[in-house]
Length: 218
Ligand SMILES: Nc1ncnc2c1ncn2[C@@H]1O[C@H](COP(=O)(O)OP(=O)(O)O)[C@@H](O)[C@H]1O
Ligand SMILES: [Mg+2]
Image (cartoon, rainbow, N blue to C red; front, top):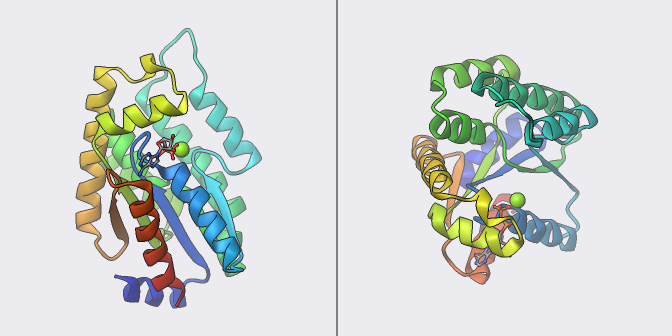
């Protein structure tokens, strides 16, 4: 796996790493850890997130997260996700790759397939068409998928202070569909994905993250 990522890296410049997984599995924790680890190693990198990462994209994020007196249509949600992504790619991702930087991104297009696709039931073909249109050939070099049951993620997120009513039964089912989609995608692209069992202790997860990054940077 890592050998093929290294080959990709020689073709592209820089290294585009995305962290994926459902709510509460430990993405932010993993990014915080990797950030400290890369700093310690003296490696230059950039941390970003989706939706967001630029002024306009963060404004779209606010739009997506706000509450309204009307329901946002699935189509509007998906298009806003990709509008934010287009801006993020042009302003942040592509320039950073050109500068040969390592990018750590909290969620990317796999999340659109998992959430808007499997979660909300939008046809996969629509999302794939948007992916092709907005990204062209751009794909992450490496995607770290943190995998755990939705219930465990919800428990962890609750500890973090997310209000309990945000995570109801319906949401557990929604997150389980998203989780299943992530796992199917990881299986289909084993050269791009590294799946970490996020039910493990934080120490074990960090050890695995260190192994992945070390073998990539060697
Ligand atoms: N492997 C782990 N074991 C136990 N707790 C964890 C683990 N990973 C993360 N946590 C805790 O779970 C909560 C959610 O983690 P977070 O990184 O915010 O998840 P995400 O960004 O994926 O939603 C945090 O309180 C975090 O400290
Ligand atoms: Mg997070």
